[in-house]
Amino acid sequence: MNGQGLGWRVWAAVAVMLLLWASAFAAIRAALLAFPPGELALLRFLVASATLGGITVARRAPLPRRRDLPVLFLLGLTGITFYHLALNYGEVVVTAGAASLLIASAPMFTALLATFVLGERLPPLGWLGIGLGLVGVALISLGEGGGVRLEPRALVILGAAISASLYTVLQKRYIVRYPPLAFTTYFVWAGTIPLLVFLPGLLKTLPHAPPAAIAAAVYLGVFPAGLAYVLWVYCLTVLSASRLSSFLYLNPVLAIGIAWGWLGEVPTWPSLVGGVVAIAGVILAARGPGVEPGKAGP
Image 1 (cartoon, rainbow, N blue to C red):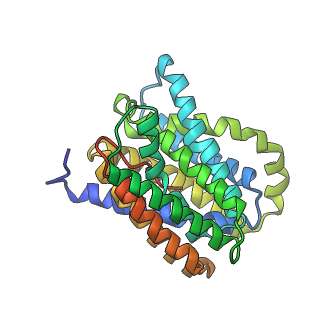
Image 2: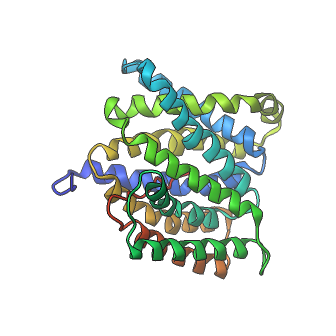
Image 3: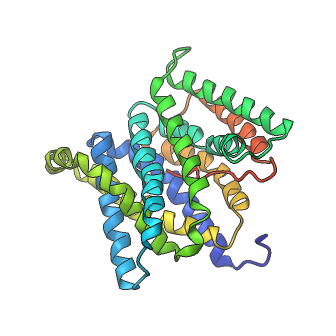
């Protein structure tokens, strides 16, 4: 579908999704002041699982087919477990704005995966885009390390972007089998199960956490991890993945603005320049035939 003639509800869904995902980078940084990365991921997705599960049960959504369970668990591992653990560990030291710029490189890795895994041909312009994207990522990593020092945790966030690419490649075939809410609920549940390894630590941390950090974690679970994921799946049913994902290039701009106002974080100039270069590279790489940009939300 080309998206022409779509009603205001679709564009409202896109706008809300973008704002929620952009705000998540600052909310993660705020919650990490009280929660370790693993415990924060678990709390966030326990809240998301309960929120989505309650609505799914009330709407009597269809149960997942047994043959789809392995794929749902794989989607949960890539799109929830690994992605959010890597993002949380990275944001311990990497600013929210720079993290959003690194996550925006996910479409570049989707293009690479499509080339080497699916055998799709990438034109010279696409390879140029990937090269620019890698240069941009390097600049962001150096900028977050202070001067010319490389920040290793920026590379951890880069791992999250690669995980997002795997998630995008895997999910497209299966979203048509279930309503958006049910599909989101099932892979969120699947991704939350491995996070239960952090439950003992969460039970120790939660009673001593300040209300503001708990509120940030609950917000992450209900809105960026709950509502925004449902909106993403819904929008994929009415817009092409490439067109929908093109709006995600706005995420770093929104995330930097929110982090500036909420946390007072101002990204370094190398990070900003690297972000512009990386996003330019992502746009070029995503122009290849058959290549769809990946989800770039937190």
